[in-house]
Length: 432
Image (cartoon, rainbow, N blue to C red; front, side, top):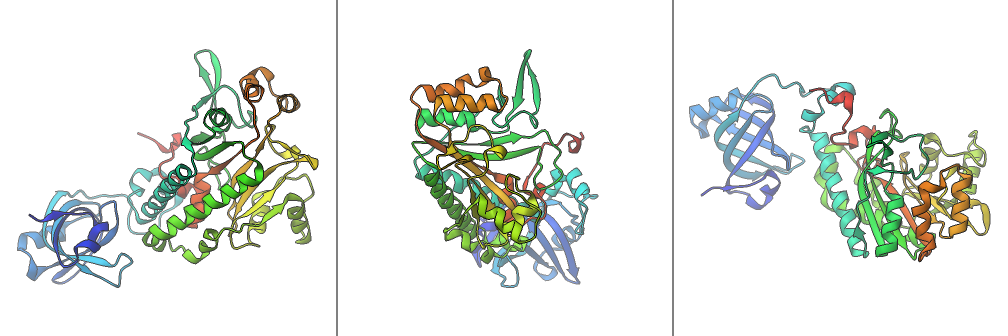
């Protein structure tokens, strides 16, 4: 019996007859030969139908196929050094399942708005396919890395009573006559998990009440947020460096085909796998910008152009460490050597992609944290449970968050962060 295989497994079946279920992405013919561009969700490659090798019925069926028709094929796999994938199939039989015309996304350039309106279909195209495969590798690498490091997966709630970083960008929800918000971060609950289990990471959707209009603005995105008890900031930076190096190496090892589809030069990513990230003090970053003639003063927060300029000075990610307390959230620990700054760091991705990680040592002293909550203008009652973590068995602890889509955008070298999100639940893009 002929074996049913996936396109990605073609290399294991060279010169063997196999069966596949596929969709058609494009077609061209040359007299007695029809070239079918095929996909099955695992890869893309070419199928060839030669008139002399098939029945008239099969040849006519191949001629009649329309874009995104679905069908079964039987044939023999051969190597094809001319293609990115490296293999093709000589088709001997073909059975059509569905063959409708009018597929709206042609093999031409389309505008961003058009593709967003048809994202449920655009997912089938090569670019989102490659992005999703790389995203999957990065997700699995994340879980594998933190399991090896002794972490457990900890799920934070989506509905939150209080805000980690203020309420200006929170989605308000009427939760059975109580105020609640869609989560902007799992961090505070993650700290509770760290006090119970030592080392945890949360990984899930987070929300901002702002339009998805640029690489720094996203209504919905995924965050990966570890929290570590008994860990100081320098140890956290070591962990972040190891993690990012490991994750990028997994992409280079497992997604060569997808990187080729995207036109991504893997050599641009390779330095990241070596580690040795520079730890650039905020003060030195300010001087760097000022010496470049930029209008930037101490105490300012970095905008996208500022982060882009800094990142272009390095061939791998760089830590910017110890920001002023005035531009960072209340929960961070102050630098004992300089109380005007926190023990914190952002990871800036190379090639102008800007911040992808942000983290700090958390303030572990009950009275100090209480004062910082009050100074931030927050309701102390809302954070009593958070203060309990310090009052009962509090220890030094640190954590960080990674914006998953931002990191994907850098790894895949995407022009727009929306390309990194496979199926955003944008209300105005989800017409029935």
